[in-house]
Length: 420
View 1 (cartoon, rainbow, N blue to C red):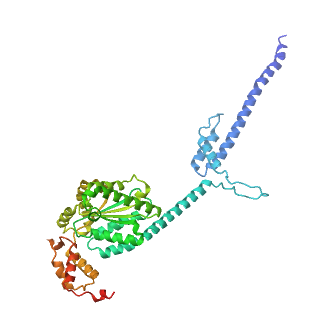
View 2 (cartoon, rainbow, N blue to C red; view 1 turned 180 degrees about the vertical axis):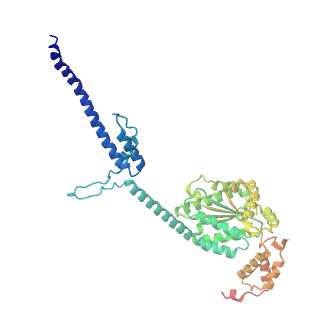
View 3 (cartoon, helix red, strand yellow; view 1 turned 180 degrees about the horizontal axis):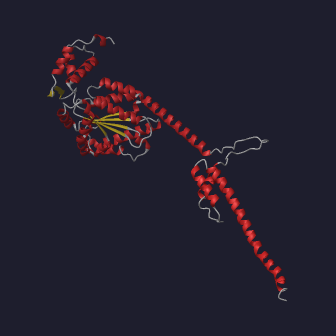
C-alpha cells in the first residue's frame, strides 16, 4: 500500500504544477512582447533624434540594452515623444485637394453692402462740398467784392488795415444767404480820417450791383434834426428797415444800411436799432448789413496813435487789439448796441495822406494839380508833430473847402479834365 500511493499522487501534482505555470508563461510572454514593442518604439525615436543629439542617443541606447526589468515608467523619453508628435503635427498639409475629374473654383467672396453705402455717402458729401464752393463763388461774384476792394484801396488813404478788415467781414458774410445774425460794423475814429468817405464808397458800389431800393444812407442831422420829432423818426426808421429787408428776402439779396453820425442819435433811436441787431429774429432780419459811423472813441484813438508812433509795423495787429481793448468799454457805455458790432478803428492821417486827398479833390473839381498849390494848401492845415512825423488834426475834412477857395481865386482848370 505504501509503495502504490506515490504513484497515484504524482499525476495530480503535475497537473497542479501545469495549472500554475500556464499563467506565468502568459505573463512572461506578455512581458517579452511589451518589452519588444517598447524597444522597437524607442529605437525609432532615438534614430529620429540622433541627428540633433548623438551623445544623448548613445546613452539612451545603452540604457535600453542594459534594461532587465519590465516597467511602465516612460518619463525618461516623454519629452522626446512629445517633440516627435509636435513635428509630426506640423507636417500636416493644409492644402485643399480637389478630385482630378472636377474643376477647381475658388470660393465666392461675400461682398458687404455697407461698403457700397459708405462709398455712396462719400460721393454725396463731396458733391455737396463742391456745390457749396460754387455757391460761395457765385454769391461773391454777384456783389463784385473784388472790384470794391480795388476801389477802396485806390480811393481811401492811410487806412489799409481798416479797409482790409472791412473786406474780410463783407466776404465772410456775403458768401452765403443763410445767417444766424445780421452783420454790424462800426467805424470809429476822429473827424476827417475817411469814415464817411468809406460809407459813401460802399453805398455807391452796392447801388451799382443791386437795386437802389436795397441801400439806405441815413444821416441823423438830415433825417431827424429835431429831438422833438424822435417818435416820428423812430417809426420812420423802423418802417424803412422792415420794408427793405422784406423785399430783399424775396429777391434773395442782402440790404445795406449806412447810418452816419450815430453819436447824435437819441437813446430812443439807438434802442430801435439795437432790436434789429438781435439774433432771435425772423430770417429776413438776420440777412442784413448795418454800418455805424461815429466819432465816439475818437479822442482815445488819437491819444493811442500819438503814443505809439515809433511802434514797429510788424506789431500793428497787436496794437489794434490793444486799441480795441481801450475803446470797447467806452462804446458799450455809450449804448449797449455796440456789443453786437465789429469795431473798426480809423487812425490819424499823415501829411502825405492829406496831400493825396488834396490831389484827388483837385482832379475831381477839374483843377490842374500844381504841386506848389498842393503843398501850399497842405501847409495851411494843423498837424500833430511827434516822432518825426506829422499827423493832420482834422484829417482831410477841410480839404474840400480849401480846394473850393483855390478854384474861386481863379486857378486854371486842368485842360485834360475839362475836355472830358
